[in-house]
Length: 611
Ligand code: G6P
Image (cartoon, rainbow, N blue to C red):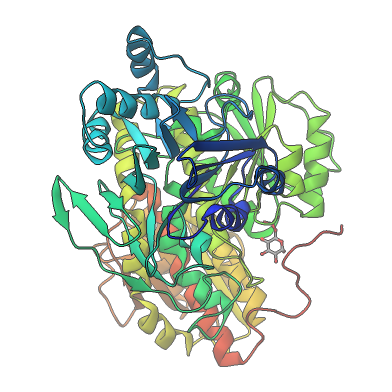
């Protein structure tokens, strides 16, 4: 995924830009570049390289660049292969340089019109149109850089976070944000810009987060932010210490911190991948479209929590995209004879990208007749990503708690995006897609709402701490959610927990139910709610203790019969993501009461790199 860094200062900013890019390497990229306005001769110097930031750093060192204003970028190819020509910054008229994250959907029409005006294109990217549009507005219409950006963004459809510099106004950066995040780093006599504050931890601890639609003019001494043409004030946030994923901050455990990060990292996973109305398919990479066009079924393979993400995806792919999906556990798949249906996409899901069984399954699948292999993964440099034909990265940040939380919910977000782009080819209408995308826009705020139940869940956890067993029930896509809830409880509290599809109760597990067996039910207000209620009545009738995580309007009002955690009404498609979160909290609080080692449960490893 692309990354942006910009700086305007009284000192040479080149080192700051390169260090910023290094800090963004974790996001995954295939080329990098930097553009600096050189102080001595006011020359616009632009250097790019395919491959690692270190290779760019070597070029920068050889060129001995010295400038006080500059921008830099790591590119993850979407339009056009990884190459120096396609790498950012893009330049126009040897005067303007621009870096961009996101996707300009109407670039093709803009490109044609600019070509008619005589502009020559060097790259295959969607981005290059933006810098030429700015050039045109400044040179032909006589606008300042700020005015040109304000005017130009009205012509852009899609998602962007962008930063541009102009040789004629060398003391400023202009930035604009719509659908792709940007933050301004506030310094003393110098200011910075980045797509992620992590890039600027070396130079500042004060940040202004730009909001959707914001445009800002940043000089070394001043920051003007405009929303709808008017100057606005945006709060400065202080983040003490280095921003990273490897400290617990104010949280007692990484697991709790990671549970609470979910709203932010889900937003990060959506950034640049959806517009207001639909999924930006190009964000899957250059090769994806031609592959998706051939797909008529999907085979998913994964382990542990990632396997549960696959099970939920099966429901989505079949009900939303209308295409069949098989899901297998990697350790089983890799030793089976596999019959591949023509037109099948092979998808692996993995937080680490190094799980031995998943990797072995991929290598096996690569020998079979799948159309292509795709990885849903949290680590850009992992073996799984490198050995797959293409990948969609989750933006969960580093996950340290052994029990996976934020990696799981971001996997689900990525898999839902995949479902929608495949669905388009199999009858999912634009209207329906836009409905799902509207729901996705609401997801980060809904996560925050669900987290408000933390104290109530903590209270509930007291009733689990002395138990030896627990049963988790769900129907339809909530069954894998129940499985994930049971796995979390097992992993960190060492309580034996089993998940069952609620309709299966009477075929065995009902025999286990008594007042020592807590029964947890996942009950969003979906079409199977009536059926689930019937199943729960079977539990009550046998004296079982019911703990129900339910939609506030689901009609579970008999407080004697149920211990209830009421969750806000949520769109049905998002229920598997949102109902997972209270179950994560439940297992966390039970583990705390039991005094186990929450972040490092016994006998388990974060990344299982051996068979
Ligand atoms: C281990 C971890 C789990 C994880 C599983 C798969 O068992 O403890 O949290 O779900 O491996 O890992 P992966 O990195 O492939 O998602």
